[in-house]
Length: 80
Image 1: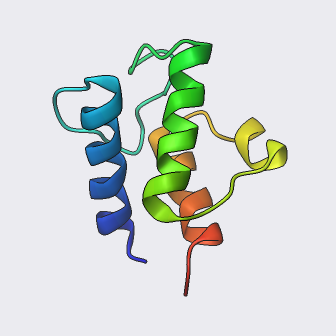
Image 2: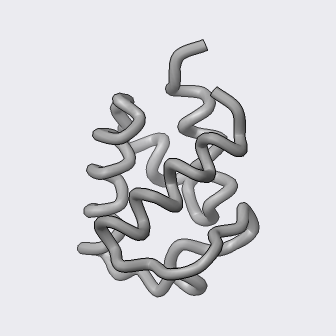
Image 3: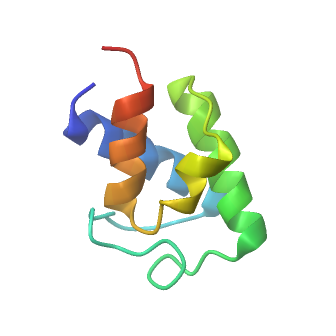
């Protein structure tokens, strides 16, 4: 999967399930910039897993602070 298509998928998930309006950039922090609390972070995780058909484990989730971190993990977990 290419980074641009992953970013588009994450934007789609954020728009549909979190009500996010606007562009997402890799440097944006999930908590500070997107203002996600623990429940909304969980919702984002579940919906990203569904959208990309991947399974994130606890180790993956601890390293995700920015949109770019999320993209990197999806790249690693996704199909070649």
